[in-house]
Length: 260
Length: 257
Image (cartoon, rainbow over all chains, first blue to last red; front, side, top):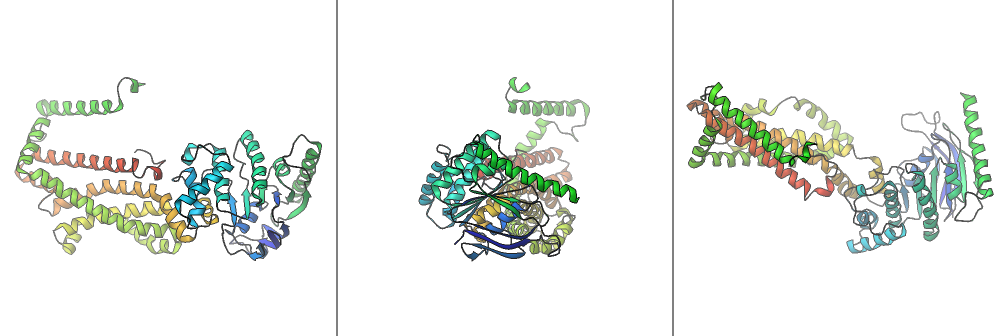
């Protein structure tokens, strides 16, 4: 059974007439269990909306979305989310360890066990020594590590990433991209990752789906990136994949210009 | 630059000293001390009232009224503010009253409250509760409604149910606004108590200020006014101390002023 199935999904925001100004229309795709699936596309293509639907914080207006064969009723710890915003998602009154232990604590686990689990994920994301710090004492990259660890500590089956490294500097981004593929292989979670950075998409994804610009955005093409991890962006096959996807997106953008 | 010259509190002490010296000179050479008693005369008046026990008693009475009203008002306002911030329906229900009573100052209600609640403690405490409640309510509500959706959704995606989102995220995240609201309300409580005690009271700092006029004891007036200011200053400092210690982890980002 696939981890996520989108079946003819359409999305209109409230206030819009159904069918007329859909931001997503007739989108169908399935994400396999344990897959690293990347969605890449221009801004305004509804990538984030797609993630919010899977997270359960928004509901599609047309079609069906299934997670592990079940319709999505609302947010659930089985589907974690790592947000683009660096500051807002963290709980600034909790320490790093308490932030990471939030999932276990709302699941009713005793405090000692929460902190023990937190420690495991502190180690996994390389934050040892920073457990007792508060978010404001951390750099942007470390805050995103906390978000990732906190999401993992809630024991999800699937993790949604909404351009999590877009606001970081290039160097930090590279380090975190590498670590994310390691974390993915260590945990076996299904990953659905949204980005507008094509290089990042090819670096991370087993499959990269290219989205068209909205309204009525859809997936135009899915690329299989059959390269071993950790990936080397100097590899000629890496460059070929990036070039192919870039060409796709440029054509998409060009067709948009002609329409206007 | 000047900070190197001497510690910051020394500058404040210096400015107070200069003002007191000017005051002393003014009442000696410029103004009739009947109208502007010299600092030493005020100190003397305060000493008299302290010896009689009136000053201490008035301070205690005024403080009790302020603190009771302030706590009562906050206790009513915080839950309503939270509800208003969380639920649009609650917001629409409460909004007209907030926007109406905002323009009705507590002082305008003094006589009405005396008719309703008598000249005793009750009318003053309720008056201060009234003045406190609106400030705290508006601050609490705006604190809750300005919590980022990402923060709330992050909690939900980590498995928190709506009750947990409320208690574990919304309340701690809005504590800075509640804290600031209560601090502002404390200042307006001092404003209100002075007015209320002038109209109907048999004790309190406002009462001293008002009755000193009958005996033309301007020095008593000054003593009570200064006591009011010092009390306000001290309570505000205590509130800030509480913020910097017990509530420290919640109040990061709340500025000193």
